[in-house]
Amino acid sequence: MQLDSQTLPLLREALEKLEEAFRGLPTVTHPDESSRLRAVLTTVAERLQDNYPYFHPLYAGQMLKPPHAIARLAYMLSLWINPNNHALDGGRASSAMEKEAVAEIAAMFGWSTHLGHLTGGGTMANLEGLWAAGRLTAGAMVVASDQAHYTHQRVSAVLQLPFIEVQSDEKARMDVQDLNRILERGNVGTVVVTLGTTGTGSVDPLPEILELQKRYGFRIHADAAYGGYFALADNLQAHTSRSFEALSRVDSIAIDPHKHGLQPYGCGCILFRDPAVGALYSHDSPYTYFTSAELHLGEISLECSRAGASAVALWATQKLLPLKRAGEFARGLERSREAALELHGRIARDARFMVLPEPELDIVVWAPAADGLKRVSERSRALFAEAAKRNLHLAMSRIPARRLGTLWPGVERDQESVVCLRSVLMKSEHRDWVDAIWKILSDSVDTILRTV
Image 1 (cartoon, rainbow, N blue to C red):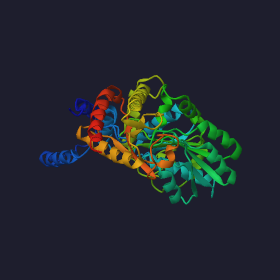
Image 2: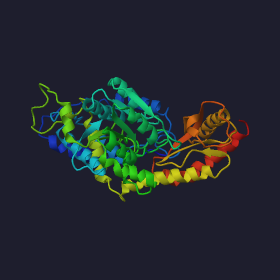
Image 3: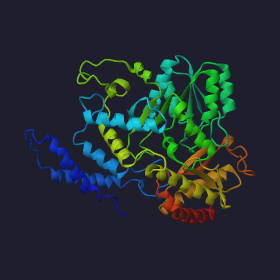
Image 4: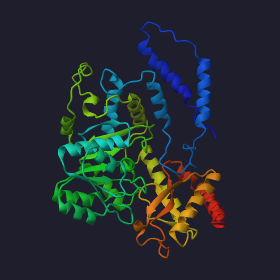
């Protein structure tokens, strides 16, 4: 196959357009370093060959999705300026583009007013959400599901906030009854609700948690880093749709444009429903905030220097692919989910495999059939390796035995956890590649079942 290079002439055209704004400046002579650059770039290309083909639909493993061509081009174009979106001195145009792009994401969740900005990724977005919550509920606990991303426990430790896990059910969703028991003990300041766990794509029952909020008065931080954009999809389960529809009622949201938002790493985003949260960021800089009376992004961010290129790329992508239901962008999400449902269905109907519950988003978790968890794990590892030989790249995931509940009846629980296979079908092209993926998977499992 060929990597996409047909769009590169567009970059040259855009670069010439950008250059028009600066033609009045004295000429700066640049030395010709072509031969040296070529040598190093060739070495870089050779080193980068030691990667999985993350851009290809046969890479169906971890959460890795190539940025859209418009995001690549806009990002590269901005690097000739290399704006810094901390203060307007460093990125006038890109700061305005960031505010516009972030407002469009907030509108996707039903917020016409908000406070928000881009971050280096989901970890930093979640950190800012919990940092603000900790300032507003001093000394109170942070609560998250045992299937929430590990970053919440780690960040709580960094912020010196007490943290406790809530049990999850067989579908990897937060157990509301267990949450209620924790809330009854008191001193809970923030509940983290995950909309799209990184393990299985499960969505916590936000409407039920909002009902508990009325009684106990805690803040809700929604970790929608992975699943947030599925708020635009029209083919979700009823439970899942209700949780996304309720997102407008939470206090803060973390989302990662560098996952389903078609952006290069790193591009996260933190949003607060109440703009008054900005008062928590109050600080002074003796040299960066003099060029405008407007709000500088650095005045509402824990990070200082931030890549303006990320804002430019996101803005361009959202102009090409607006964040609206039934639009081209939303249809891409729906195709990813269709691919996951189709693959899950084929696996569920085949006696050679065992599956976990139907995916809520676009992540499928399953394993080769066996009579005990130890044997299941051995076969999962073998199938992972065999499929890779045939250019189908999967991922592995360790599931605690207690999470299996009534799943897989008759399978001996001969160890405390089981290794399963996991596919994140987050490329819209995956919908057209399910047949090819299934053929390789089927041939691979036949091979390993003869020996393992």
